[in-house]
Length: 178
Image (tube, rainbow, N blue to C red; front, side, top):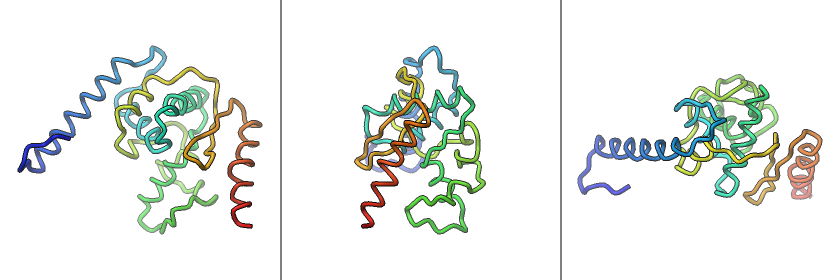
């Protein structure tokens, strides 16, 4: 942000809102015909994409996975929403690891429990994530899992996904403990 010297809180907030509105309008101009999200839903999905990957080349594909899951009535089951739910749970001490028991906490932001999008954004999405949310790449994927190198591997079906979870999560962390 480019702010004048001495800009107060109101001026800073105004600049942030203006920048967001400009980014949203740009993303809206590129909206795919198949995407029917209102502004809150679009920003919420973009915030999840923002937290799910920092890799620009993956955003549109991750968006595709989420759109495919939403169309099929599947839960999004995305870890950043669990982290956000845990951080909002004041009685919970998060150790920066997601445990199996965390996936079942009842919270409106936990997309392992709740179908559809959470009630609002979990982060401040950048313009690239806004664009990805409104213009996903075409794909048949329904799943992705971290390769533990800041990239993901994508799958169209559960069998493929389970094999990748074994390879990139279970086996990987088992080897690290040895």
